[in-house]
Length: 293
Image (tube, rainbow, N blue to C red; front, side, top):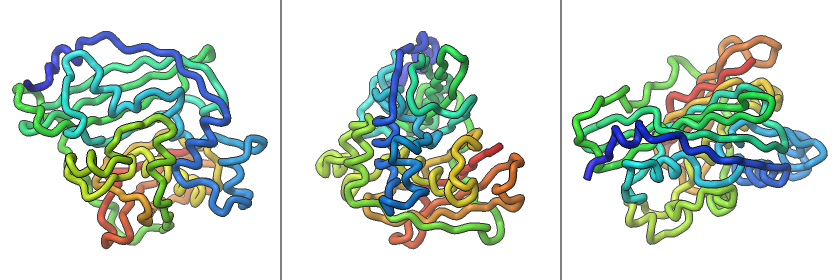
């Protein structure tokens, strides 16, 4: 049966209380590849509690629980095979810097359901607030193969845009650990696609793939470290489209276009494209933008 779009869109928000502390932040940072070299002062900002600051993409795992791409599958009107689900994209808007420890309320609901004919796309929005007001808003775009066909709106094109013309202003490479997915999943995404070879084979992959949100976090860290002098508080928003898979152990090549520069006190944005070095720069993140202030 196709997805019941009206039921999903009409469902009441799912509200839950979330909490996190420095241990959750440190584990997340290690899960996206921080801490190498272990004694580098720039890395200790991500790994040592006395110097700790929070990479904003931690918001995607704060409080534990299922990530947006999985949480969307528990909404009324959505009953699909996990093996048919792909993470299409992620958007994050920061209202304030993410604190090292906190308690907050997260309210999630499906805000869009698109019918692609042979697939469905759901957009799950989560609004997070604490006693001082809004903290962040994130949206997960969930692509479900074989679940279209109910005659709904097609929505925006899913085709990634080409990277900006001309050579990038900065290029950085980040090699991932062979066990990167096993470490990252300890932050709450237990999808067997990222650990179980048999499940990955049923989903059409040669071996377990890295979580898209791990690549998302590793890329943001690269941009912050390269262009913002490690100042995580300058990130205002971050979005991407997942254009391809990453396998643990591969090297990410992160290309950054920031013609206005980012090291000053002003605001702007960085355009980013990410490829897998070992597969001839096969695209893994596209339409990626980091906005800073």
